[in-house]
Length: 195
Image (cartoon, rainbow, N blue to C red; front, side, top):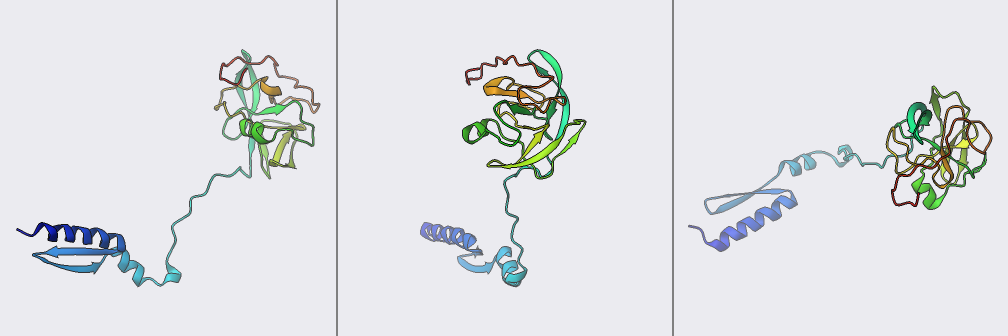
């Protein structure tokens, strides 16, 4: 039987060598060190041809934020509304103007602006435009900046009438006082935002 100190020492060297790129082979009281496969392949390859692993990137806003229409229940009534490429309901903010978004800071965190450098639409015949704002390249539809709501999921409208945000519809006019097809009764969701 081997001395316990020798066994511990070999185990410690093995762990250190594996971390350092070596594999320790212990046999009958002796040990040899050989480069591991990772060390061999790195040493054999010139540094200029070594590939680096891909760096994960955070998702960024789509450069082609497509706007679609979808049916959803808004204030108890089924309506055709505008949704983004992920199916999230789109809203407009009543205090905005055609050239200025008033949604910034913490409000923009709760109501993320729809931004794109090249927006497109599918079955929504309104006028799309891109306006550079402090939030980026924001998309407008018939002169209204568009936003999603952090509490929504695809097909679910929970922000209607909340904090002066209203669901965007395909027929909404270019005026900034409301929409031609939007019910304005706030929804009661009881989600802790006081609405």
